[in-house]
Amino acid sequence: MLLLITDTSGRNGIVALARAPQAGKPDEVHILESVPLAGGTFSAQLVPQIAALLEKHGLRKSQIDAFIVVSGPGSFTGLRVGLAAIKALAEILQKPIVPVSFLEVVARAAGIDGRVVALLDAGRGQLYSGEYEISGARAQVVQEHLITREGLADLSRTVAISTPDTSLASTSREAGLRTFELKAIPPEMIALLGWSKLRDGEIVSPEQLDANYVRRSDEIFGTPSSATPQPSSKP
Image 1 (tube, rainbow, N blue to C red):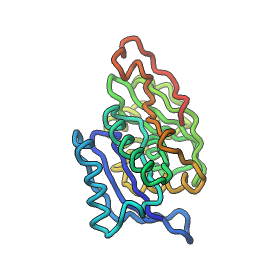
Image 2: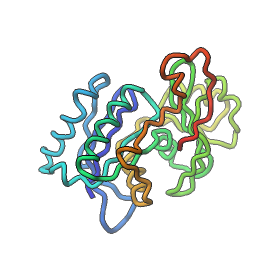
Image 3: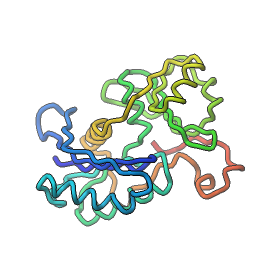
Image 4: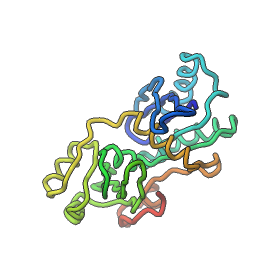
């Protein structure tokens, strides 16, 4: 199967093409190529880069079997641009969309079983926190919500922390938490998670695809002073 992977949730993004085996080991995905997207250029570069990748590998849009897209959390503008492009392509091509949480990608990247908390900087002195129970290839979301840096001290010492943020990793260690500092999140991690969800039928239509901001809408649209971090009901 030919998979198109996009991530526009962060300061920088990626677009990648991957092949997943029709038979054989289900946990194997081969990245054909991954192209970085510079922050601030998503609206101008995403679709042209997709077209360029397909042309470079002698492929057509109609050969894409599924879209794997990071649905959040992250930049409001970046997510809106990225998801809108995938919605349009998926609707035209009538192909499934697999949304994945970047927090789940980070949690799985620690490579351990048990209770794992993924952390990302959310700005405004807050952190995106995703807590998962991981067992082999399965991950059950416990909650995704906002916490403060001070809130790290309240986390149970039985959990492991996974983060690609050096500052957060340092703060986590200072709080006495078992911490896995990730050097990078390769596109293979996003592709593998998306491929697993696709096999399990965890797909959405273009109309159903929505961003997982974790923040409430009132925080996104300008009233953070009155907002209190709340758990997200979305996995």
